[in-house]
Image (cartoon, rainbow, N blue to C red; front, top):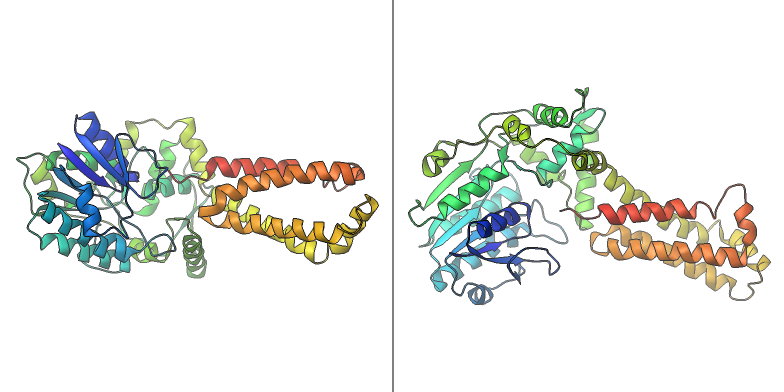
Length: 424
């Protein structure tokens, strides 16, 4: 079969594409990011803006569509309306016009009982598909985890690495479902004889509390049980607000206002219809973890998970702070150093230019879209400061506060940030 997969570079979409290709199917992978690494035929399509005509040109000779598009919350990069409702409807209408019969659509647990804009737009997207003449299947997975660390599976690893588990005040039950079971579901439902026009809740076999899930991951990583600290409501609210702020900077943290409400509700489902339609008996979380021993990569990732936002936050504030200090209380000190080094009339211009460059780098690091470029700029500017400082003010190398020596740890931290910048 020739199968078009949307969000093919995502956590679920990439696994589906890989499995389809291993089974001999031909895939058309639709991605938003032109630099996404996806095997096979790849097409760049912005789901938020693609029209029916755009989709018609992508659907030629396609036998089935698997729609994996989903975003947690509105931000500068994402729109839940475009991703889940209006964008999905345009795709489904194009499928009808193009003669594509089979559409498997990923919704979310609880979409039939909207609680947030995330679940409300998911519900409207489901309704659009269910009102069509297509052979549709709506999948409503709970929290999906797998060997790849993204979203929930990344968060659980990060929480497991903390010396104390900071538990949110209100968390509902979770039925953790394995990515491999989700992918197998898609494979079975794409078969010509598979049933259609079904809504299937895809979830794990057991209801677990958040502390239980994190505890299982911690045990899997080989660490002793951690004490639990129930976060005060004000602290939890502050974390969710920080997550919202990071979202508007282009990052995708799992802890945001939408997550607060969805976590409180939990993610569960009645799996009987799913098992009846596919024959799949879902794996439990302990079963899945036992089948894949934790590696050194897992330990590194878990320990770096919550350090990553700290690294980026500290670097951003550092560069902005140095720029502001140079323009403020540090101005006369800078002027004195440059004059001693023989820099005359251009000293004010040099200080101002350096300060503004520092601020620009700090702001650039804060925004996900510009972070990579800003980090490289920070490395180059730091090297430039080391060279210029050596030429103009070599006495700084013997300064007891070590301003020239401190450049090198900053460069190392910038390189670390470059190494851990990616989400997947």
